[in-house]
Length: 278
Image (cartoon, rainbow, N blue to C red; front, side, top):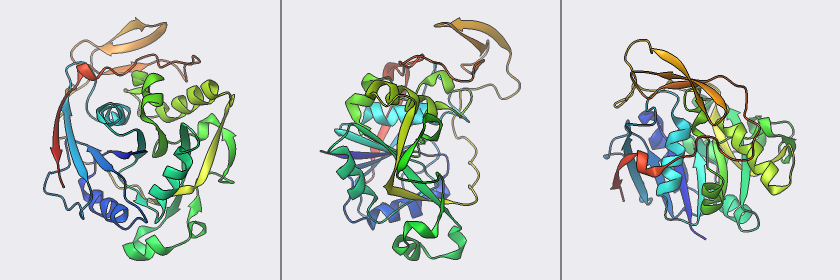
């Protein structure tokens, strides 16, 4: 098994502490992939095998709310057998990689947990020594079954080909930045025979700040700088409001109900540049 940690990032100021936490893990991942146009190549990587993917597209909306696209870019560009998606404002717990690998050795995917904590109260090394119970739980109880609405892509692990075959994160959510995690959780639960449920594992868990830091201005976007000019279009039975001047769209729905992704990611619609930061 090889494991690639996929980090969709729009916050260059949080990357240093994140990478440092992985460098202090009990075992290292085989690769850490940062998908970002905002992070620079001169970041400290602490000896970790880090690569940076910068990307552009003429077809998919790139700008605010494109986290599903960024995750998919990393997943489809990975050469590892397994992937772990991890959000850029978090800190990895001490045994996160080790715990994730143990779970993935016996199942094709899992949903992890995170613990809210006030980062300003502790030093970084101090946080890495804290037990999970110091933080406020996202799901109560952790390590239990919950409805698929509790699926969270900030700590999600899977066999890479398994999740690619099922369409990854549905890009039908690209205009919302909300719901893509839960939709993938719903589809995976149905596909695996778990019905409407997902199991939220702890461990592994990530430390999550009580106050989420703001996103940075986008360095590249293909979206309108002013108001969009929207018109309704039909895509695979769903009504979308599509901008006539840029790739932006909004979907008029709560959640699709099918077992496959409606708008599947196509890597040929994205141009990438990859830098190895070892």
